[in-house]
Length: 114
Image (cartoon, rainbow, N blue to C red; front, side):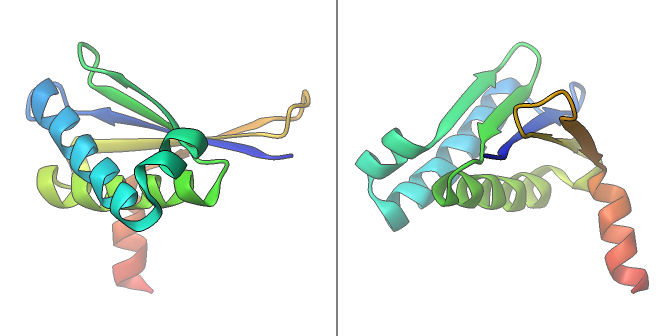
Protein backbone atom coordinates (compact mmCIF):
# COMPACT_ATOMS: atom_id res chain seq x y z
CA UNK A 1 0.00 0.00 0.00
CA UNK A 2 1.33 3.42 -0.93
CA UNK A 3 1.72 5.96 1.85
CA UNK A 4 1.72 9.65 1.00
CA UNK A 5 2.79 12.37 3.33
CA UNK A 6 3.02 16.09 2.65
CA UNK A 7 5.44 18.25 4.58
CA UNK A 8 4.85 22.00 4.48
CA UNK A 9 7.65 24.41 5.34
CA UNK A 10 6.79 28.06 5.83
CA UNK A 11 9.08 31.04 5.38
CA UNK A 12 10.43 31.94 8.83
CA UNK A 13 10.58 35.66 8.05
CA UNK A 14 7.11 36.22 6.63
CA UNK A 15 4.87 33.60 8.28
CA UNK A 16 4.27 33.66 12.02
CA UNK A 17 4.02 30.27 13.73
CA UNK A 18 0.60 31.04 15.19
CA UNK A 19 -0.70 32.15 11.79
CA UNK A 20 0.46 28.86 10.26
CA UNK A 21 -1.35 26.91 12.96
CA UNK A 22 -4.50 29.03 12.61
CA UNK A 23 -4.57 28.42 8.85
CA UNK A 24 -4.17 24.68 9.44
CA UNK A 25 -7.00 24.65 12.01
CA UNK A 26 -9.28 26.43 9.55
CA UNK A 27 -8.51 23.77 6.92
CA UNK A 28 -9.13 21.05 9.50
CA UNK A 29 -12.53 22.57 10.38
CA UNK A 30 -13.43 22.66 6.69
CA UNK A 31 -12.64 18.95 6.32
CA UNK A 32 -14.56 18.17 9.52
CA UNK A 33 -17.55 20.01 8.05
CA UNK A 34 -17.42 17.74 5.00
CA UNK A 35 -16.70 14.41 6.67
CA UNK A 36 -17.51 14.76 10.41
CA UNK A 37 -15.11 15.25 13.26
CA UNK A 38 -15.10 11.55 14.13
CA UNK A 39 -14.07 10.46 10.65
CA UNK A 40 -11.31 13.07 10.51
CA UNK A 41 -9.98 11.89 13.89
CA UNK A 42 -9.94 8.28 12.69
CA UNK A 43 -8.52 8.82 9.19
CA UNK A 44 -6.17 11.81 9.32
CA UNK A 45 -2.75 12.09 10.89
CA UNK A 46 -0.83 15.35 11.18
CA UNK A 47 1.97 17.02 13.09
CA UNK A 48 2.39 20.75 13.58
CA UNK A 49 5.89 21.94 14.51
CA UNK A 50 5.45 25.62 15.33
CA UNK A 51 9.09 26.44 16.22
CA UNK A 52 10.28 25.14 12.84
CA UNK A 53 7.18 26.36 11.00
CA UNK A 54 6.41 22.97 9.50
CA UNK A 55 3.26 20.93 9.19
CA UNK A 56 3.08 17.31 8.10
CA UNK A 57 -0.12 15.67 6.85
CA UNK A 58 -0.62 11.94 6.30
CA UNK A 59 -2.62 11.77 3.06
CA UNK A 60 -3.03 8.01 2.72
CA UNK A 61 -6.84 8.26 3.01
CA UNK A 62 -9.19 10.34 0.86
CA UNK A 63 -9.96 12.49 3.92
CA UNK A 64 -6.24 13.11 4.47
CA UNK A 65 -5.85 14.01 0.80
CA UNK A 66 -8.67 16.53 1.07
CA UNK A 67 -7.07 18.10 4.15
CA UNK A 68 -3.80 18.43 2.24
CA UNK A 69 -5.57 20.03 -0.74
CA UNK A 70 -7.55 22.49 1.37
CA UNK A 71 -4.55 23.42 3.52
CA UNK A 72 -2.43 23.93 0.40
CA UNK A 73 -5.05 26.24 -1.07
CA UNK A 74 -5.53 28.25 2.11
CA UNK A 75 -1.80 28.55 2.84
CA UNK A 76 -0.70 29.55 -0.65
CA UNK A 77 -3.46 32.13 -0.95
CA UNK A 78 -2.78 33.55 2.51
CA UNK A 79 1.04 33.66 2.43
CA UNK A 80 1.90 33.44 -1.27
CA UNK A 81 3.49 30.73 -3.38
CA UNK A 82 7.04 31.67 -2.37
CA UNK A 83 6.37 31.45 1.38
CA UNK A 84 5.11 27.85 1.28
CA UNK A 85 7.36 24.94 0.29
CA UNK A 86 5.58 21.59 -0.08
CA UNK A 87 7.44 18.31 -0.04
CA UNK A 88 5.60 15.13 -1.01
CA UNK A 89 7.01 12.00 0.50
CA UNK A 90 5.69 8.85 -1.20
CA UNK A 91 6.62 5.56 0.42
CA UNK A 92 5.52 2.11 -0.62
CA UNK A 93 7.16 0.51 2.40
CA UNK A 94 10.10 -0.83 0.40
CA UNK A 95 13.68 0.29 -0.21
CA UNK A 96 12.58 1.92 -3.46
CA UNK A 97 10.57 4.58 -1.62
CA UNK A 98 10.77 7.96 -3.30
CA UNK A 99 10.87 11.50 -2.05
CA UNK A 100 9.47 14.19 -4.31
CA UNK A 101 9.79 17.91 -3.67
CA UNK A 102 7.08 20.15 -5.07
CA UNK A 103 8.04 23.77 -5.63
CA UNK A 104 4.73 25.63 -5.75
CA UNK A 105 6.32 28.57 -7.57
CA UNK A 106 7.49 26.30 -10.39
CA UNK A 107 4.12 24.53 -10.48
CA UNK A 108 2.31 27.86 -10.77
CA UNK A 109 4.58 29.06 -13.58
CA UNK A 110 4.13 25.74 -15.40
CA UNK A 111 0.36 26.17 -15.25
CA UNK A 112 0.51 29.68 -16.72
CA UNK A 113 2.79 28.63 -19.58
CA UNK A 114 0.74 25.57 -20.50
